[in-house]
Length: 436
Image (cartoon, rainbow, N blue to C red; front, side):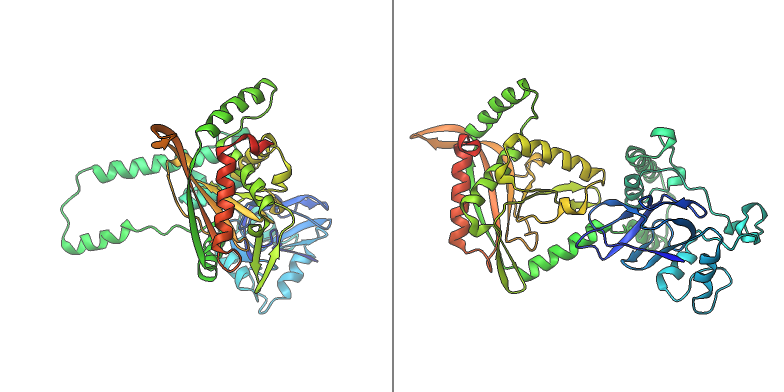
């Protein structure tokens, strides 16, 4: 008998959600086969088998959350002996075949976790089953991302018609179903309602509040950033940067890149490259503070925040100071797309030494970001706005952008942060130096 355990798929993972079982009871599994999709604190990831065998029992149903190390399935030789041994070895030897002695396993049994009995028994033959609840329901075909979005929006997959290959339910199908439900509810609310007594109105108010289950990504984000604000004494430095020349430089650069078949560069790509250059020149900001110790990073790994429906992830561009702006643009775009599809690997979201968060595309002019521990600083970038400025003794319209550095005062002094912002501002106002 081989137990399949919830694996640790990221350095911050403490629990995981079974997003999709790729193998079903009775399926042959070869080493390296994808057995299930696991939603971690960072993405939906594939869990591969380490041994050959047959999946004899599923202990944890899709959608269930369990800590790392907890058994989620049992593999054997296909005879059913492994599943039987797993059942008989539990306390009480429950007659329904649930693996006892584990709160998570018991919970999965109550929620309809698919299980099988030994070959030859009635329970192992769906056609002969006398209890309809014992026959596993046919699961709708859906992508792992679609399942995650469905859980977040409260959409029942069985009510959704898939438009993907082979009728597979994809993310847009979930969003359309959620929008249709919202529209129906809005129409119902706008219709005339019968007069209610005060007591019935009081009961109705309780339906105005809906509990939304947290995704693993949002749970970990909430925990880590709360710890960051509680433990790291933040201070903030804001600079107003004249990016008139930067915007013009970007336009010229994109014309050249497109002519040669290269990727388009965004203002944020230029900011990321400028940050990497400034960190290389001012390594005192490229540090981490943990366990009452200060660590100096000799390489510059830039984290770029990406907002998802399920929360915030930070893909990392390693050695950003050694890469060209076009390389940063291509890598950043590719990783952002895979982050939205839940396909980023853990090591692509780990090891950043400094982060950049840009909300300018939403029209936010200025904000302060929370430091991503164990980093010592993060840069918040706002929108570009035309403002009247005094330039060479005259009032002129210039393109201005505000940036705010959040820094951990345990690791970075105010003057050190100010020098970094001064260097960064200088680079952005003389953009040719960014690619020099």
